[in-house]
Length: 356
Image 1: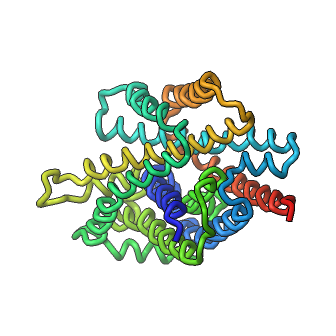
Image 2: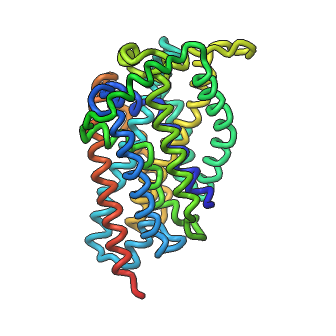
């Protein structure tokens, strides 16, 4: 089993479970959310299979190197200008959303721009690191945090206030047909595979059947916990009232024999590093795609790209409120699904152009 592939998938699953995905799905709990969970599993697994199999024809190469090898220059520059926008926006939305959470639940007195500056200093250092070092950092973060996150999920499932009747009631709406937005949102859980367009540089062996079997199991588990646990703790009607259902759920849990009784503080401390790592991976991919337009490396070019990434989040922090952010997130989920289809089709096209 290729552990690097699983790290990318697991990171995206963890990061997506706290901000946009639960709220968008719970808002559609009577309008096809459950069916969207079912549809997202074959879509996400199928897309990950198609992209990874196409990239297997180009071992140890990222998309910029593949385009250099088999694509005309006009196609190379078009792709490397368009695609970084999606990875940048995905990281920026995660960053802005989590800063809003920190400002609301950790330190309401601190201005958002001050919290943003702390994050940006770390991001400024990490997104331009070599791809292998980013992967090593991701490995450390996951090994440190995953046991505690799974423990929190266990506490939620075994909590005295977990209402399985509410979960069963939500399941009765399984035959309601979902909208494209809910399908795209549910499938976002699986989209960690898209980072392969850069991290394929680290892959020395083909992905095995067990990688995709693990993706299915982890994806189903993640979708189930992200959607049903807030409903079970807060009720099928009560869960709709929260902007961040999983934060309210964590605040309902108590760690009786722990030095920190309120689970929300442990939960947020864990997700600070998970969210930061998610932004690092997204922006690293965007950075490498832009850098791939020109093989000449220079310190000035590096800092120009990093500066643009940093500056782009400041207007979002200053001018976007939470409601507007969620509306933009819903639109982005649909556009992102289309971008994934484009990336897969492009990679398969490049595979056909590769000399035998």
